Image 1 (spheres, rainbow, N blue to C red):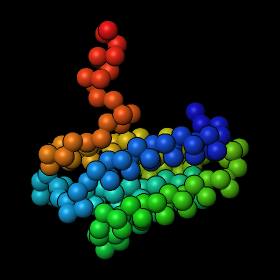
Image 2 (cartoon, one colour):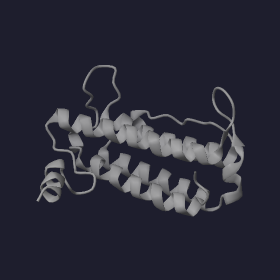
Image 3 (cartoon, rainbow, N blue to C red):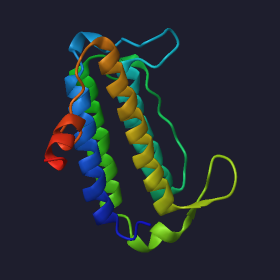
Image 4 (tube, helix red, strand yellow):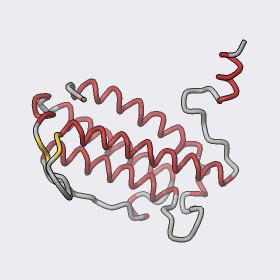
Length: 164
């Protein structure tokens, strides 16, 4: 359960920094790459993260669902996509800083089903981000690009450190 918006901001900011490591590992010429026709491209995933952050924070703060899309023209290059993601993130965190912690326990509408407490939508935002970060990691591996280690250690490093 989240009881402090400021504590959530610190936590989510760390999540975003790790996601950006994966995005920065993406070769700039691979923004339109996807493993198969019909799959989201790398660029689509990045733009979708921005749109989803805006959507989830919007439902928490205003109670309204609005998905602004992830079309290529929003941010066609890797650098433009990073700048777009950063701008949405700054705006979202500013909106959360102004949000009263007591409202975290108030219900917010679901797209289907029963309303959900605002803090749960923030947790959904995190889960959503980690899901798509994992997609980016898989895309990088399929391209032959070594994905960054999430905490700076590979499993081999952990095994070596814990079995000696």
